Length: 425
Image 1 (tube, one colour):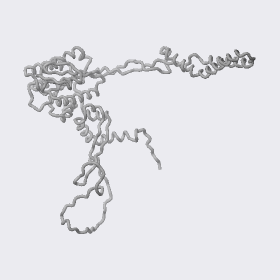
Image 2 (cartoon, rainbow, N blue to C red):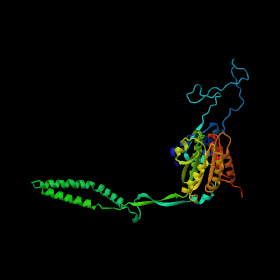
Image 3 (cartoon, one colour):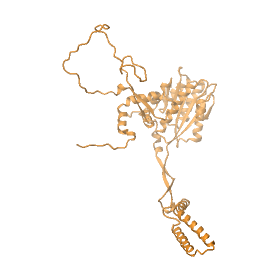
Image 4 (cartoon, rainbow, N blue to C red):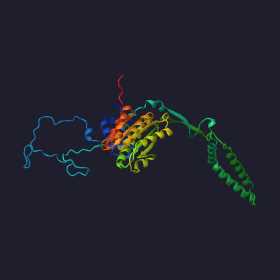
């Protein structure tokens, strides 16, 4: 008989292979739990992992077991409380009042759910599975990775041209101090004793001779320690560092007029966070530009973008004009992959909506990789929505969707960035 012992290294006795097999097997339940979690968790926790709950009934498997078998006759005692045909409730499990937590079941079939945690990477893989950034064909050459040489500390081996003199001398001094400290201490004591004997009027000729011999020997031993040794040499170390040439800029445009309440801004913020996390899976370097507008547009930081209060009307073209200006000044379309996301409740000055359409078609979309517009409202669509519908008909990488509440964020996001199936040749 042969015994096989699995000695593979798995932290805390957890099998990575079994974990991945489990995730694949119950992927549908896990993805549903992840989809529900995106709308319930806090915005600041978006980059952490997630606790996944799967009902125990979904984990049950068919099993074989021994039946009673044979022909059996049972005699049940009579009673004065039930009549033939009455349904008898199942007795509570555990034989009485339990000490566990949770609500009791009136059917006596309570079951615990299976809960486990997934990491941030597993969470993002499940969150963005089957999604792709549209219009990436023009950016493929930009996604090459270059390398540059950077300083990376010191090492004990290298070529003479890379010797660091200061670091080597520091090592030499430290070594010589460590190797001769005890001898120097003995030498100091011997010299002190010699001085005392020589100043004494008594005859200490033999002792003085012995001390001088000791002092001479100690000095010789100290001088034998080399000034610098190969052990002391330190070389400047260099390493190759990846420099991504793929760069993206994400423009966040939002209406902050009086009609946009804080709840609507929070919905927009969750959408922007999903978009940013999604872009980080494709690009190494991402700039985020926040542009808020009412009748006038302004580039601001994140805090002011989401939480500043404004009153007045809405002119959406002001934000698009500022976006064009920022692109021309800082983000050349030949060097940057430009993405835009605009959130609004649909309010806009009616005469301004045609100008928004013109700006998108003539100045923004020819330079952008993708532009998405989400309208967060419970009302009927207004002129801005209708003008943007005409833009969507003319441009394949402009997308617009309607969001009514928090629960619509993730489904709409998946719809905007779902992978397009390639037609068979």
